[in-house]
Image (tube, rainbow, N blue to C red; front, side, top):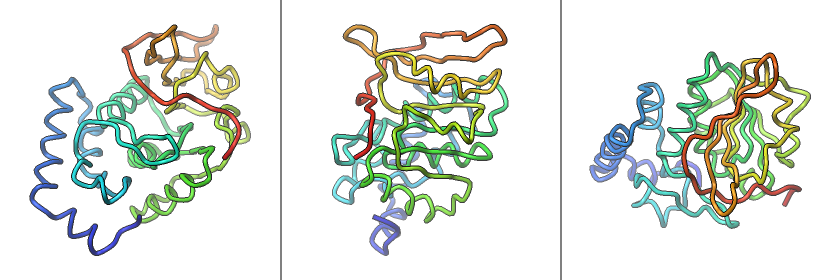
Amino acid sequence: MIETPRKAAFEREPLVLRGRERLLARLEEDGIRNQQVLETLAGIPRHLFIDEALGTRAYEDSALPIGHGQTISQPYIVARMTELLLESGPCSTVLEIGTGSGFQTAVLAMLVRRVYTIERLAALWGLAEPRLRTLKLRNVRYRHGDGRLGWPEMAPFDGILITAASEGIPRCLAEQLSPGGCMLLPLVVGARQRLVRLTRTRSGFRHEDLEPVMFVPLLGGVG
């Protein structure tokens, strides 16, 4: 699943290059405005984060399966959540809940000083870390554990990004935000999911309901 001659050649194929260009144009059309985010997504080889059998779909704007009932998020959602996280102000340290394939982790690592990422499934955690090291991203710290507990010994964080849908605001994670810091998460609201931004203020927390989303559920424990 790391860089191989076949994958390296695949990355240079005209269809791949055109696919990345089309994806970038699609994201701009859909309202992504942060140029740093767009350039970062354009520069990351998404096909490295999925199975080779799905390589031809790597640059579609869609979620794709990565096994174990999990998915690599739609590029628009990755771009949107990253843009919203950075929009709140200076963001030096970020906690990611749900490493998954490592693609969102890679985007964050290219835009902030330090990323702390937690994955509950050992099989995914074991694949994501070497992928990120292949890209020479050395500002990431990894943990196999229950993401709902956060990483208290490394708190506070300027930003927290949760890549699975929560039944409510995880208080334990909210308390690990620094003053002025924000948390982006999919929140289950009835039969729907909404993307929410929670910002820590001097008097408490500010809650913003942003847009509909669809994520796998946030689960506890490890596997």
